[in-house]
Image (cartoon, rainbow, N blue to C red; front, side):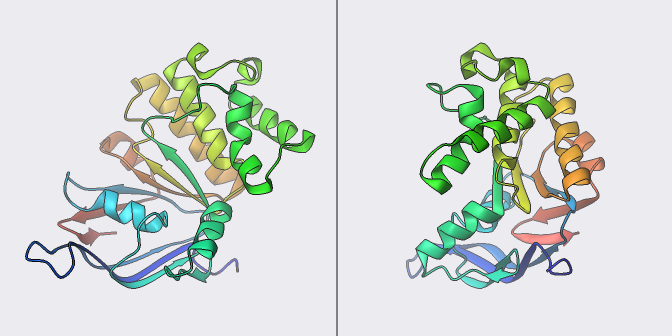
Length: 229
């Protein structure tokens, strides 16, 4: 399994409004492989297909044609239960806006993916979530609601939430786009730490050339095609 790519796309195409006069193909035969533990940036102008590609990699949309393999498993879009299970165990998500649940504390937000997976909370989950928050520099804020945290602190909670199930791949969609430069650098450094120390692969969508230049690899998308990787 160690030699198996964490992600492989082969001739992935995506069209909308199939069979209608306004049918449009957004992705045109994408071939892409991401190695385990790789830290890659995905860049491209608005309308290049980045969001569509990320949705397909995140198993939120199905390609019109082509092959998607995640963590060594070929995705079959007609089996929704297995797709949901694969997403839960193989992917973490970090977004531009943290999407924390306001009614829960920081530690409860971090625990949420584990609670959903197991159907209940337990002491081991809480201990793991607290340990993650400590590594994020947020142990003293663990029992505060999101509204009591700064934007950078909230995003660090979101990163911890993405990592709590130890997924082999984290998809980060403009994770620093809503932060000031200092907070953005801190969030990036934390993702890099987990990438290097835990061999978690990251696919980071960003418009920030500073961050892209600090990734191991830059994948450029233009008009629905990979033009450099």
